[in-house]
Length: 283
Image 1 (cartoon, rainbow, N blue to C red):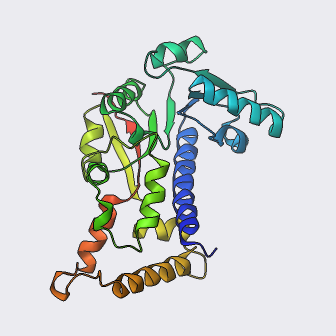
Image 2 (spheres, rainbow, N blue to C red):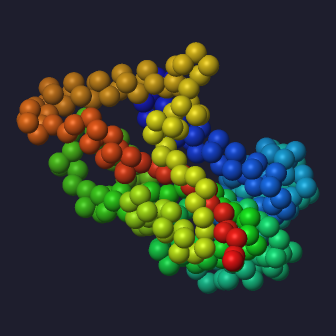
Image 3 (cartoon, rainbow, N blue to C red):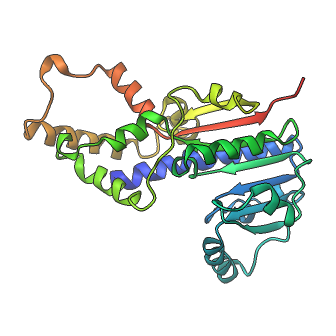
């Protein structure tokens, strides 16, 4: 892989997918008998994890239009869905999630695991809170895995001035902004406050992981020989960007350069985050 943007996306998706897969496997081995995938889109867990999920009922929840496309593709490629999967079409803005799920055979009294992947940043805060309240109403031991960004990232996007960015960085930022133009990112958790945020609903943070952070690289992107997937392409791209910035005279003055520690902290606050939480035992 040579294209730095492609490499970055592959690395991000690899970490996110493996983190979620591991959380799902733990939940099922711990006794979850229902899995609910919210905003399922083209989520593939019900199809590629059939052995793991064989004793589990899986509910894919999404908008009717999205599910129609999904069903057509599943029929064309796989011949149909697995027998333990139920598609649940919903109008998220006007229908009650619990009521719609119940009409499809869902039992909220059972230990359940929720997957909320690539969703939180697109929802208004009220909708995010309603979702976590719904999850927390399930029996202890139920849980959720989700990705999110911090509020500082949302605020940065809202006030971003492209003219202040180095020319070498602008194409990458412009492509990202184009991707979210019709569905903007509007919600982020308080910086480093995921544990406290989840506790408001009676959820206990089991683990949080920064995509691109040292732990995620070590756990999911480091080969047996110690090399990292895509590391060379990323390093070469960063070196080219730094050289173009210097050539354009856009490097900060000597005394104003950010320290490596401060740069890593900034990158962490702006990065994709992952979290797994469980419904706390009620005293």
